[in-house]
Length: 129
Image 1: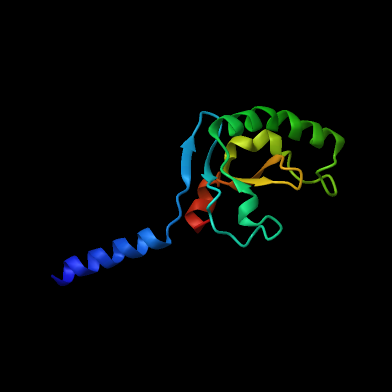
Image 2 (image 1 turned 120 degrees about the vertical axis):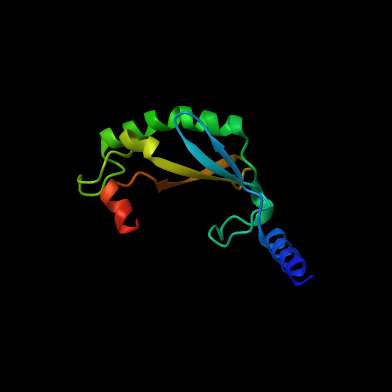
């Protein structure tokens, strides 16, 4: 009986505090779509009523333009401080993404993307990175 009670408590805890995030995998990228109901304090300028859940179609369109856009920025060096930073567009396949949708003051849909490095060397993996 104690084991059953413990399992029920653990399940209840996980269900009440987990938030539904959709994970997906494409050939060139993988990521997570955060729903409009996802609670975060990271984006204080975008209240929860100004949020939307990005669709896979919107993300595919964003991703189809992303590499070209970043390559153009890199050529103009507008996204590089002293010029020693890496060309991110060359390594896009080494990042996993987080997609969060917001509405601006005009109601236009904006998808914020967090890029998380996911390609460590063998030695870095041994060190625990």
